[in-house]
Image (cartoon, rainbow over all chains, first blue to last red):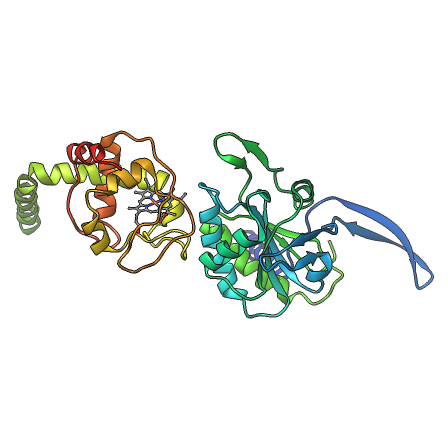
Length: 215
Length: 140
């Protein structure tokens, strides 16, 4: 009888875990607290790390800032068009994300070039055509190198480095950002299973309605 | 009991016959193919894909058996030196990216080409180290 109770308890626990996992994604990054007065009462609010503002151009030569993504869920990554190693794998996988969500509103992919000297707007457009992407659901961004490299820290990815042999060293992470510009997931863009998890997580995030998430 | 013993014997005999039928040529093919499969994964798959599907019009697919057959003697040079100038393809397509050079010995190139030439729907048989060494002499 005791065994049975334990078993039942375990099953309930497991079910509960699974449930909460499906309902919300974690929020990553540093957090701070702030005491605010709500309805005459003092309450503690959590301030989450968010992606700061930026100013880049996309493959069409349009200026893109943080505002251009207002109201969007988006996936970000860092790459360069002449990358001989992991970028083709990353973007073969990113095409799966693109094809799944390219027609839904308020969803975008942004790929930051870490080689802005070579990757001009014209080069990025040619690359986009080569990938077979069109429209405005996947932007390839070019900007000042320092701006891009500094921004990479906000996405919690490794700061890109230049090397003689590989040209640039960077990691192949895909970062999921919510409508409040908070980091909600980080995935190895070279791993098909991780990318499948990202595709599922985007669905979960899109279904999330309340902006205030208990942590 | 008797039946299963007889069956086992039969299976063993069959195995024996098949094994002795595996000629030296087949063993040679297997050796190149298996080594090539491993090398393809580490040197080519990121760009050309696990199924040789390529990537849009950035990287060409390796599934065009007619192209591979026609350019049979150029393949070793392409792998060794890379490819930056545009090839004339039957399809008329050009590709955006460049293929980097690979500093590999002929035996490894032979393995890779044996794998490519006999995967992704291609079937043109073994490429040996000697074939590769000969083709490399004529690289432009």
